[in-house]
Amino acid sequence: MYQQEKLAKGIDWVVVFLYAALVGIGILCIFMVEYNPDVNWVSAFISGQTEYSKQLIFAGVCAILAIFILLSDSKLYTAFANLAYLFGILLMLATFVLGKNINGSRSWIPLGGGFNLQPAELCKIFTSLALAKYLSMQELDFTKLRSQIIATVIAMFPAMLSILQNETGLALVYCCFFIVMYREGLPGAILLIGFSFGVLVVATLIMDPDLLAIILTAIAIAMIYLLRKKIKRSKTILGLIILIWGACVGIQRFAVPYIFNNILQCYQSTRVYAMVGKVYDCSKNKSSIAREEENKGYAKPDDYNVRQSKIAIGSGGIFGRGFLKGTQTRGKYVPEQQTDFVFTSIGEAFGFVGCAAFLLTYLALLFRIVKIAERQRSVFSRVYAYCVASIFLMHIAINVCMTVGLFPVVGIPLPLVSYGGSSLVTFTILIFIMLRLDADRQMVLR
Image (cartoon, rainbow, N blue to C red; front, side):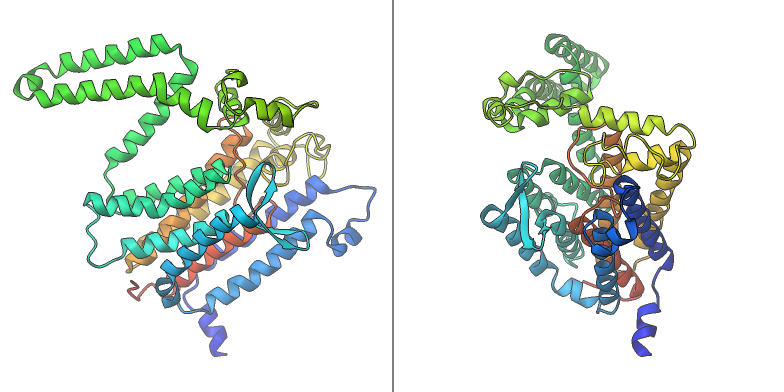
């Protein structure tokens, strides 16, 4: 009786309901994609050989995990935050020795029985806890550069390991922690610099290099003219403008080409160029020869997934084709439609209206998490809740934009909906630790 009262007391059941609804939608989507009228789906379901039956098993495991977390003590998460982060880093390092190569990424540890663990997914939980632990330190002054650098290292070290594992998409997700740091006092200028860098990269891809250099020079001259009175009083402003101009020209002339030709794999560069309607020349990429050797047979164009995804979503129209009536997703025209492109099944089956309702469910969850974050007395709990909201936001934005061609294909799952045990377990733990902390929101955790 006491355990039941502890389980129910203070739990935000709205989040639990939204979580359960999204997990249910995910199983339904996987069922729609995998359904075969010639096979008895009940026996296939019971056999556990189908992906929708496996996802239900994952959901059952997650339900047990959720109950266990809700019955735990909130102080455990502050006490073991740093140790958990270290454990996550060690797990990621273990993939370089024990890792299994799946779809070109050596980021999986085989567990046997056809199940694999992706430490980079789990490490998002540990990074959230470690960042919350650091930012809640009583003596911390986050306005100081040293504190900001330490927080950045905590957030980005797993991202660097993800890049070494050839998991660029997951590495991007770790950038969401800058949103959390901004909430805790990180200067907005740093986010503005990051956004400006992104705009400059896109401009470099779509514009002639000489023309872009001329435009940047013209902007610098215009700024010097507009600020000429202030420049007379302080030559520092002139030096700053020249420095920014030189950095921008250097980035578009040297840094961006180097990144695409020497750091990114050929297929990654091709996908980014395809997003802006350009064709990337793989002969410039240092990995192009290796790629040609690995793909001597017929290879689908690099934008094949996105084109098929657009066709599937577009064919749904306003109200969709109906449940189990999709021709594109059920016809297996869209690759990876149970995982990265699961959103296409919703678009084809339920159309624009279904997609809007689905995304509104996510929006309601995000708003609820932010509300939970803002009502915390403890900095630790608030930071952790914002980490959860930021991770969800990044995953949703990238995945949906990826399926409609607004972002390169980087292999980011849709939270709680895409097929996969590692992903579902990760998001379940993230949410229910937040709910456990929220249930004890009157406590001050450090």
